[in-house]
Length: 288
Image 1: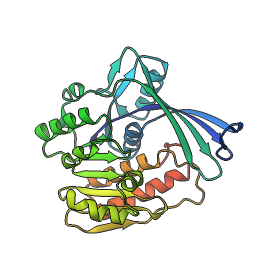
Image 2: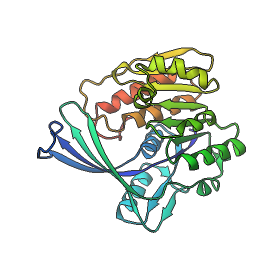
Image 3: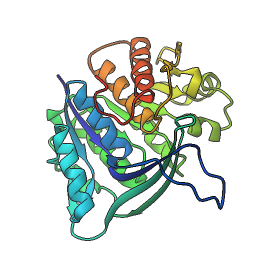
């Protein structure tokens, strides 16, 4: 069991399950509705806790009903909340999600009215207690301060970074990470037509980090520090039920394997298998 700190977002997810995604200006009836805790970092923390780690989440919550719901959910999943920053006003981020039964795809409309997690809160955390630090690539100026602080006070603790969304200036965070996890959206924004192409080109700019890039049905690719390109095929379930959070599950699976001392090729395969299993079930519970 390792101690892992995950820094980033938690949301309230309002999920409407529909037979197929509606066309513009069309009214459809939802076949089911679920209200869950979500968010990239919070999801990753919950899965890591399922995998047997002592996981802490560092993020912002508001003192309101939905903030209480998120807090209680994370506690029920054995995620430590000592590092949470609680504010008296605002509304926790809310994602309105249409989940298609036709193919398991999800479409998200996101709203937030909440301050991002501040670096001044992060520097109070005793980082020497953790075996791994993971950051969601958002709130970039503050995250940069946090990652630089981590490098100063916990120089031997591995640091990973999720680069899912295209955000101006996110590239300045990459040299501060030991592992950078890229999405296909980010790679495509950089002009890549494949994960292999992206990693081979981008790897020369980040020679000191391990890099990964997921690419849907093609699976996941990785680039070792010595330049070796690795590939793990996608692990498709018998039926795709729910792809919401699959990327967060992949990240958790990758961290789990690496913090246990596995090589990157083994970690890629393990993470890909776990993400595939998630796509065949609803939600994030009972993945292990």
